[in-house]
Length: 170
Image 1 (cartoon, rainbow, N blue to C red):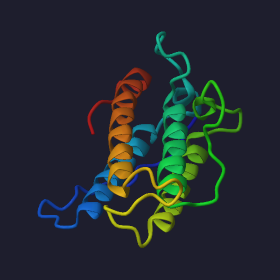
Image 2 (cartoon, helix red, strand yellow; image 1 turned 120 degrees about the vertical axis):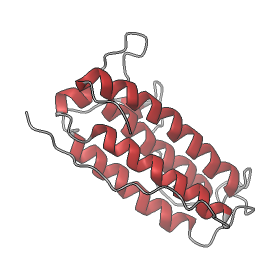
Image 3 (spheres, rainbow, N blue to C red; image 1 turned 60 degrees about the vertical axis):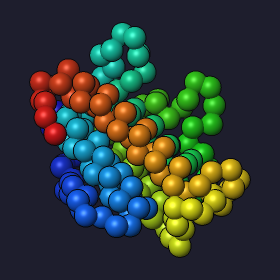
């Protein structure tokens, strides 16, 4: 089976950044591209594999679906106040579940579509602003939270990619 997703351009954030929120979002974009690139070139079977006995629902596609749900909830809905459905309502968290129609290309496309929703939802907000949904967080806190969550899961993708086909590195 051939691969169904391709590499995404990554750019390291500017080292002399002066805009705090832009810097956080640039680091998030770098991590997003890294996550997508960890799936690029995998077959659907490799990307859906769950090789970790202690985490039987964790696959590369599941990680990307979960990151899509994280961005939807925290950035689009909580910070930006978008009127969208949550992607992780339920127990166990359904964002890790791979549906028969999920492919590397479709999951990456959904993740990238969420990036566009996030950009629109965050438009006009600054780091000190309160989130639009509940006002319980600053935008700074929410974006930093999503950066750390994404970085954590990129580490999982490093392991899953190495187990899938031996590829290591950035």
